[in-house]
Image (tube, rainbow, N blue to C red; front, side, top):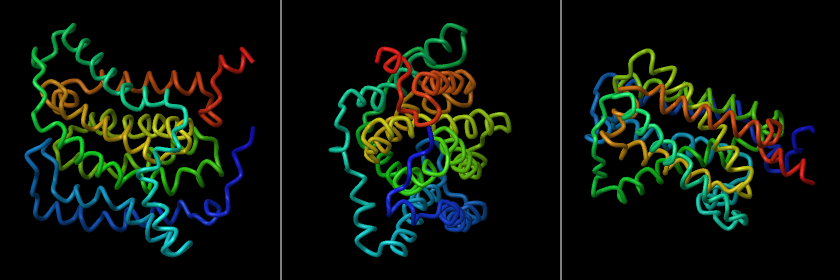
Length: 276
């Protein structure tokens, strides 16, 4: 099965220019953070990361304007709320519950092996506001990585290959932030590269099966980040104590998804084919 042929708008898009522009817009922010590091009280995030989060959407808007003018930019931005594309409502289950389930499982394993996480879960009262902030941040990333570049990449490669390329580039983009937060070199691999690649595969899987809805990808991204931040002991407990467990489980889930839905499109459920 060959990758799907792109439509007219997708065929005009340049993944290479998109990735170059995202990094070009982000590098000055990384340099500024290195010179004047200012961090938020939540998750020790650099303030410049808040701005950098929107560089994929900005890069995509610039390129879409060049290719399709203002109408194209408006269409791209509207896709942040294209929930009507999700005609199969069953896909809200993995969108909303896959990552929280993995976090609960991670917590159980950490408790089982006596790893240092709090025994009680006390989600912050600001969780709804935290979710809104993460939704906006996710829109800043996914309008670019999902709304702009995923379809042309899938037109050139299989869904898995496209996900691996996008995921790796996106993961490397997160490394300056990880260094600033204080990740150890080992966590660069587990916490940045592995998560970046596996998360992108899962996002493309959801996107392809949820009617090519960018909203689905944004919501999945926001739930993922919110869940990590309200994890017992906060994100630091999930990542810094033993990130290998959580990210290992996410990697296992990704392998299962690729096996069951197929690497070519991530949409052809193995057992549905056999039943047919």
